[in-house]
Every structure is written in C-alpha cells, then in structure tokens.
Amino acid sequence: MAALVAVAFSTSAHAERHRSTDNISSFETEDAIKGKVYIEAAMTTPMMDLLKKADVTNPTAMLEYGLALELGRPSVSSQLSQADRDKLKRGFREMLDLYLNSGDTFGQVTFKEDSMLDLPEFWILLAEHIGRPKQHIDASSVSQLTQGGGTDTASMVFIPDTSDQDQEFNLNNELVLPRKVVYAADACAESAMGFSRMAKIQKLDPSATKVTAEQFKQAREMAVRNYRAAYLEGTQACGDKPYFQKVADFAAQNLGHLGELKEDPNAQLADLNSAPTQ
Image (cartoon, rainbow, N blue to C red; front, side, top):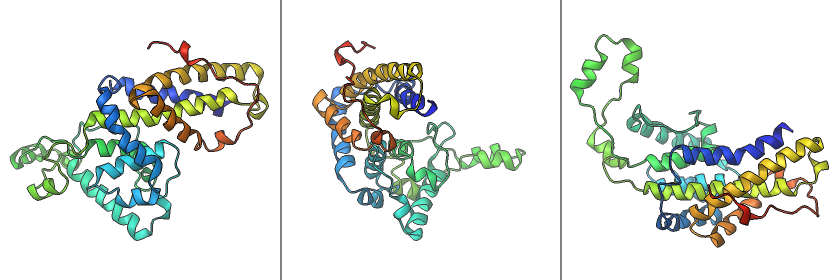
C-alpha cells in the first residue's frame, strides 16, 4: 500500500513545487509553445547524444536531458567512461564553485556528484540558472567578511570570479534559456508523467496491488484528483491539449514497474470534463 500511495501522492508533490514558486502563473502560452522544441528533443534524441552535450556550456542539452529523465527515459550516465564522468563532474564543480550565490536554491537536489547525474531536477534547475546575472563581491568586501570570522565563515564567502570565467560560463550575459520557457517545459514533462502514472493506477487490477479494497479505493480516489490536476496544468504547460496527450502517451511507455502491473479490463478512467477549475 505504501508504494501505491507514494505514487498517487507524487503528482501532487510535483504540482505543489510549481505552485509554491508561482511557476505555473509565470509562463504564457507562447512560452509553452517555445518549450515544445525541448520536449520534442527529450523524447526523440538518443540519451547518450544528449548527455555527451550536457556540460556546463550547453544549458539546452542539460534541459533536454533532464526533461528526458522526467519523462521516464533511463539515465545513461553509468555508461560513460570514468574519464568522461570525471570530466563532466569537474565542469559542474568548477561552475558551481564560481557561480552559486548563497540565495540560489536547487529544490531537493542533494549534491552527491554521481547520483545527481541521474536526477532530472538537477539538470533542469541547473539549465535554468546558467547565464543569470549575479551580484559581484569586491575584494575589499571579501577581506572584511573573512577577518576574524574563522575558517567556517571564510568557507561560506562567495569569492568573485574573473571576467574570463564569467565569459566562459555566460554569467554576465542574458539567460541562455528564458526562464519562463524552462518553467513551461518542466511543467509539461512533469504533468505528462504524473497524468500517465495516475491513469495507470486507475486501471490497475486490485489483485495486482496486494492491498485491501478500502486501501485501493483511497489510492484510486487520490489518483483521480491528481490525474485531473495534471491534465489542467499539462494542457497549459505543453501549449495545447493534443501535444500534451502526445507527451503523456510517451510518458506512459516509461512507467517502469508500475507500467508492468496487471490492468482491469473493465476499469474506466475518470471524466476529465469534471476536472476542477483550480
């Protein structure tokens, strides 16, 4: 039951992340339409081709690889040679050391250098942040902050980078990827995956879940709510209903163990016309 409920809760958690940062209200229809090109690449480009391009100088490839992971495509980071993995991580480490301000947030990402390569949120949020202008701290400010502060204080101080480093990582330029477009593409992929997972739960044969009838009923009711919520967000974030359905159909092919569970041939999906307005 715990696993089934966790899956049913997942779409709400994803949707809440967008709502809590006002992302869903931060993009317009034109942003969603522009985001389609990244979703399309995430669905069609070989994963290794994306990953090999997804270094700190190519936020587009990082976004596309992250979206591909979000849509359930298996990570291929383990297939990289050790030398290539080390090079990729070294680039991220150098960029993060130079670029991250104390106010930068990366959701729930934990910076464990190997595991983060398999997290869609890491790739998407990093792609979103690259190129954002940041506040510089001059050398005198650094000196004042570190004097008498001990090693702990000094280690937390953001050391200003050089102009050459700024140019290398686009840190003084306009965003390489418009943030609203990233929001839309991310919401499109998340919603499509959530929609597909909630549809699958509604179609499950109860005998495949090994839970009581009451527990299954509760999980299904939760899935219906999340199914409708994902549909509302996804049709906005993907630009239109037909494209959202296309992305959701793709995600439905990548549900992992959930996708393999037996279905009830008589099960019917909830009516989307009854979806709540909010």
